[in-house]
Amino acid sequence: MNIKALLHERAQKIIAHYKSIGKEELGRQIANEYTGNRDQLGGLGDLVKKGTDALNIPQCGGCKQRQEWLNKKFPFKHGKTPPG
Image: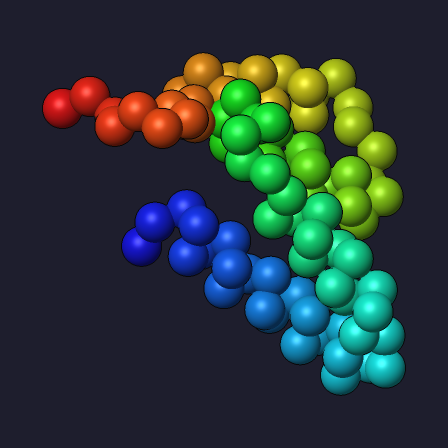
């Protein structure tokens, strides 16, 4: 499954959850934040941070280190195919 399909699937689950508690519009806003423009993200760490920011989870020092590590291990290639 590619990242776009995975993000879309996750966004639909977020919307469904918030719809079930009567807050569909909030769910859509969070899903839009979660699935935002991937071209602006350096890697997986930035994507995770975007999700936690949307949920108002503050970032600690360990979170910042994890973000940097994830970005190095799983960078987004922005139109390039991954090697190998």
